[in-house]
Amino acid sequence: MALSAKICKAELNVIDMDRHYYQQHSLTMAQHPSETDERLMVRLLAFALNASESLSFTKGLSTDDEPDLWQKSLSNEIEVWIELGLPSEKRLKKACGRAQQVIVYSYGTGSADQWWKQLEPRVARFRNLKIHHIESEVTTHLASTVQRNLDIQVSIQDQEVTWHNNGHSINFTPNIKL
Image (cartoon, rainbow, N blue to C red; front, top):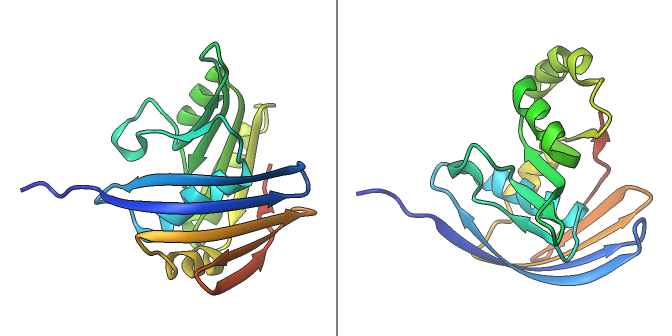
């Protein structure tokens, strides 16, 4: 019997003073059976850092042709393409050709550093690409707070993120690689 996705609901309150964006989002996320709690929370973090009325989760792990999140215009053009993890140069080239802006949120320890060292000289030419790294201490903390129903407040000021979730708090600044 195939495993089914786990459904998580999140009430996400975003206070982004850098972008002057203040909004409450009621989100439903399907966690693929192969998706870790860490990756699920990085997806939610990526949503919070780029929140807008038109940002949405895609089919994610089950689809090779889509990013983890995207923002589309009313004419169905991809404005923002958001990848998680350590995408290949080929995937980034494809994304940069299809979207106005591509953002990658890498996470983890040694493998992320090695990935970046190999990739950096080959992707510097993509002018619409931004790469941010989320430290493993942050993602481990976020993963430890996963519940089926989440109540999260994210404040962003001067690129510093304050994340409050179910009585737990963490402050951090994503490491900008490109």
